Amino acid sequence: MFKNIRDDLDAYKTRDPAARSKLEIFLLYSGFHAVFWYRIAHWFLKHRCHFIARLISQLTKFFTGIEIHPGAEIGRGLVIDHGTGVVIGETTVIGDDCTIYQGVTLGGTGKDCGKRHPTLGDRVMIGSGAKVLGPFKVGDDSKVASNAVLLSELPPNSTAVGVPARIVRRNGKKVCSDLDQVHIPDPVAQELCKMSICVRKLEKRIATLEAEIDCQKQSTSLNK
Image (cartoon, rainbow, N blue to C red; front, side, top):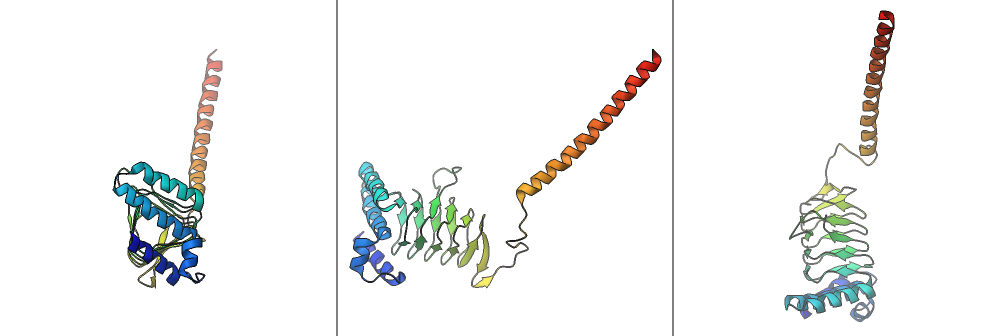
């Protein structure tokens, strides 16, 4: 546990250009505080002190604005930059040397049991506001862009953007796609178009039925 804490300090000093000293990181960085207390809570959880683990987790959430479930598995060198609004679920697994920015959710979809949250490989970067939801893996050296919503597995050394997220770069090369950010189909417009077609069919059917009723009325009046 203490070796991981030392590795976390080294990671902040290496990857955060604003960090001037390890003492500053240790005393003032809320992201470091959240991971520091997570490691202590995780130790208590592994030793079956569930209440103490959750108590530490909730107090840390109150003071840092970062929620990390003590059941998550986090490797060495995690950097949570800024950190406000970060949520890391119970069955999340995070590899070594990952970077997470503010507003990130590593959560579930509510449809899974057991393993419900994502697994991040080594050296993964999750941009601010991104949501990674579900029990799938994000491969080593991959990136999820800011405000993206990732709902399926991401191969190693890939970059995903958008809602829902799609791969735009793999192994340093752009991935060709028939879609772009301007011409993505609008699902709402498509449904409205289908409804409009159905309404026109119903109008024609109603007009036909009304004509048949008028003919029947005229035939009845002539018979009288």
